Every structure is written in structure tokens, then in C-alpha cells.
Amino acid sequence: MPLPIPEPNTGSAFQWKLWIYTNYDCNLRCSYCVAKSGPNVPRRAIGLNNVKQLVDEAVALGFDHIFFTGGEPFLLNDIYEMLCYSALHVKTSVLTNAMLLGQRIPGATRTRLDRLEDVARAVGENLIVQVSLDGGIPEHHDAYRGAGTWQKAVDGIQLLQSRGFRVRLSSTETPANTGRLDLICEFHRSLGIPDEDHFIRPLAKRGYSKEGIELGMGNLIPEVTVNLDGVFWHPLSTDADMQVSRKMFPLAESVRRIQAQLDAIAATGEAPLMTFT
Ligand code: SF4
Image (spheres, rainbow, N blue to C red):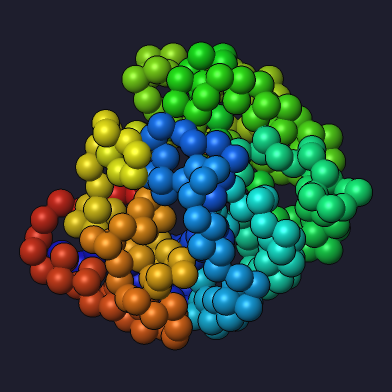
């Protein structure tokens, strides 16, 4: 049975997404982080020139949404140029814990939010900010992310909203919040964030996480993912078992490999792949 993954540029409703790991360092060290990020983790920055080429090739291939993730992308001084270049060409989302946005950029007088607002002015509605929030009360979020992080994330969300940003929320269902996910839904509605801009995903046993569901190339719908080491099946992980190519470019070659792998999976007749973002 063929899988519902069309070629890019076919006009199908299926959306090809490109994920770019901009860096691996982070101001937090969440105990369930699939990227194994943290304050002392090497940056492994992908760089502006690579990002520009990735955007150009992805747009030519028919990708219709590019996501920037990390680590914490707003630790980078050139993230604004990356987002601007991308969002001028295609719908663009940036994932953040939202805790640094109100702070001044080191060595500058303006805050990260000021710079991000400049980008939004240039690109309009093509830019979406996605913030991680795991609960409607601090205990549900801080259990995996650290004491005090819920309040700082909420402050960051409200800062973004005060500047007119569309904010999407992603929540991870964990043993700390399962059964009380209604609280996060009540909370995001109270912030004015509609249901369509909130999604919940399960905890995955990857990276630092020792619990959760086990996912890999055999059961995930691919979402092409790039870091400095090459191209991967899905942003869930840039571990070796998820690697598609050691070469970032040309992106079309990795897409071809992914499609060949999908054909091989389909030929087995096993269970259909699932989404996980
Ligand atoms: S889950 Fe996100 S915020 Fe937490 S350490 Fe990983 S990259 Fe940083």
C-alpha cells in the first residue's frame, strides 16, 4: 500500500516541512530534551550561508514551511537574518523557550524581541513563533524544565503577544501533566491563543529522556531535518540511526533517498507512519 507521501511540487495537500537545527546550546537543560541540549553543550551553529542555501533549495523543491529549532535559536546573533531570509521566501516558524526574548542582546542596547520585531515588520505573517509550554500550572512544566521556567515562558509569551506576534504553543505530555491537559487548554485560551495554535505530543524516549514512546525511521512520517552533520529523517532526533545523508547539499538528493526509503517501508505492508511535531 503506497504511503501518503507525494513528490514535492505535485500540488498535493501534504506539506513538505524542512527543519533546521540552528545550534545545540541552550539556556535550559530539560531532563527530557531529545536534542541533548544545555548551557555547556557545543554550539554546532549551522551558519547563515548554509541557511540561505537551504532555503533556496527547499523553496525550489516545493517545501512550504521551514522550522528553525535547536538548542535555543535566540542564543545566536544571526538568527534574525536567518529568519528574515527564510520568511521572505516561505512560511517560517522558530521554536523557542521564550525566556531570553526580553533580554538585551549581548553587547547591544536592544533586546532580542526588538530585533525579532524588525524581522516581523519585514516579512509580515510569514513568521510564526512556537513556544514550549507543558502546563497550565508551573508544576506541570517545571518538573522537566526546571524551577521557575513556567513563569518565564509565560512572561515571554505575553511579551510576544504585546508586540503582535502570532504564538503557537507546543506541549509535551509527560507523567507530570497527563490527565490534566485540560488545564493547559484552559490556560492558552485565557491567553487568547486558539485551539488551532496549540498541539500536544507524547513524550519520546530519545536524547536525555529515559521514558516515553520509542520512535524512529520505521514509524515516523519524514520531515526533512538538517544540521551541520547532514540530513536526517525527522527533527525528533539527529542521532546516527536517523541520518539520511552526511551531505547537506544538494537537498534534492536527500529527498530522493527519503522517498526511496518510504517506498521500501510501504513494500513491507507494515503499519502506517505517524506524525510527531
Ligand atoms: S527541550 Fe528545548 S528548552 Fe529544553 S534543553 Fe532542549 S532545546 Fe533547550
